[in-house]
Length: 242
Ligand SMILES: C[S@@+](CC[C@H](N)C(=O)[O-])C[C@H]1O[C@@H](n2cnc3c(N)ncnc32)[C@H](O)[C@@H]1O
Image (cartoon, rainbow, N blue to C red; front, side, top):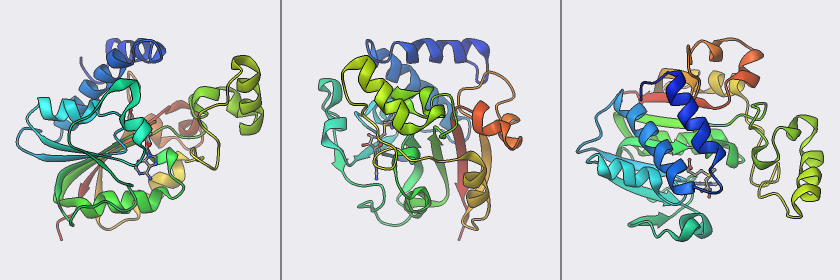
C-alpha cells in the first residue's frame, strides 16, 4: 500500500481496532508496513537489523522474510511469549544496555518503545551506538498528548492519568496494563525533535506522523498542534560517518 494514502491509513486503523481479537493480522500488517517504510531508505536484503523492544517478534520475522539477518532484543519474557508465540533467536535484553558491539547494525529499529522507557535520550543513544556509521535508525513512539497517548485508558488520559486509570478499572474490572511514571512516560514531540536535532552523531532524514494519510511531515512542523495531531512520531535517522 502506498505511504501515505487514505487506503493505507484506513487499513492500519481497522487492523488496530481489531488488535485484541486478531493480533496476528494486526501486527502482521503493521510489520509489513514498517518494513516497507525502512525500505524506502535502505533495502533490507543482506543487512543486519536489530529490533529493540520487539515484543513477540512480528517485525523481526518480517525483516527476515525480506532477506535481513534480524535479531530481537526484548527485556520482558511475557511480551516475548505473548499470544503463545516463541520468536526464534530472541535475546532477553534491555534497550539501555544492549549486548552488542558498537556499529553492529545496518538498521536499528524500535517501534512504540520510547514512551515506555523513563529515559528516552539514553535509550536513543544506545540505538545510535549499535548502528554502524551510515546506518539507519527507525524509531517511533506515541506521544502523551496523542489521542492514543494514554494507551488502553485513552482518550481519558486528557483528564489526568490517575482518573483515566480509575475509569478503566471501573469499566473493565481490571487494572490497566500501563501506569504513568512506571511503564508509560509522557514523551512530547517538540522536545524530542529538539533533542534529536541537537545531536551531532545523527542526521534526521525524516520526522513525520507514522500513520497520517497525507502530508505526514507537515504536521510535525506545527508547534502545539503537532502534540495532538501527529498520533505517533516516526523518526528516520542516519548515523553520521565518524
Ligand atoms: C507497546 S510494546 C511494542 C512492541 C513492538 N515493538 C510493537 O511495535 O508492536 C512496548 C515494548 O517495549 C518493551 N520495553 C519496555 N522497556 C524497554 C527497555 N528498557 N528496553 C527495551 N524494550 C523495552 C516492552 O517490553 C514491550 O515489549
